[in-house]
Length: 388
Image (cartoon, rainbow, N blue to C red; front, side):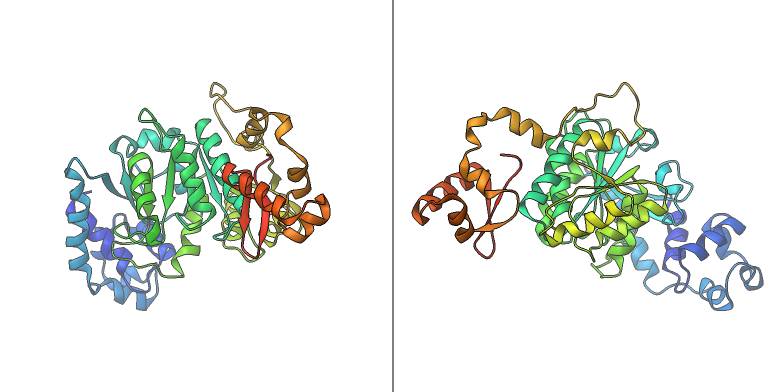
């Protein structure tokens, strides 16, 4: 994008009172943003309100400074150690086709990652699955997200999520563990609710760097945009819009993940949900989605069967959870694991089920925790992990 072109697009996105819908109407009527700003006010009023037309004839505050900052950010990737960067607008060859076909595509996208992924051919061939869920997942939910993402990436899918705490981070990490230097599509895409010169939450700075090295960071927000609460639900339409389907791993009844699932359904995309314990509030959102018609998912294959995918691409026959079970001898599934069940449980209930004394239970639980078979939860509870 040339500087003059970038200047016009930035001005359009910064104009107060002119949202995506009004901007697209103006672009349809007059062409590129530079043509919009060349129109007399009476012509603009055929496509927008008088207040919007007046705003379009005024230079937005901070526009010149942001242009300088954005131009410098865009060309910082000229240094070999810096990830490639791109800014694409509606109609640009690099604009993701799947996102362009949604009802409310963003006017501009800021992207950062390896140069080999910033090619129109990559977005044309890419098959994506959005994975979303609770910011406060159960240990089992977090492990499910990591394992499903790893397996589905191994089958060639690009995992799309939002870089949030909890399920989002686990999905990104799972996909990254399956990434290789020979990948022709991004392992994972993080759609963020800030400018790409910021990382939120800050504890995901290292994760964001890893994604920039083996995937893509994407935002519709100008550089310098802070983590405003309203931006995160809005960016969810991009997460679902980039993907052929959305998998909800864990979600409470009022979770923002359900917004993403609703948007996916409205966009004509597949919606999947992993069921969980009837006693866990983090499973109730998924159960509600299943009642509403989302596909219940137990295996990675359940997802792959529903997504459009070339016949010659290898698909896994089982989830990592199932593979983990077959790798361990059956004798390891002893009486204590059976007594644990799959719901969180306290020491008193475990003693009642097993008849073990407290000291014996503590030793065995510690050994299982160190082996990754059991997770310790707040409130003195324990939970069995995977299908160990």
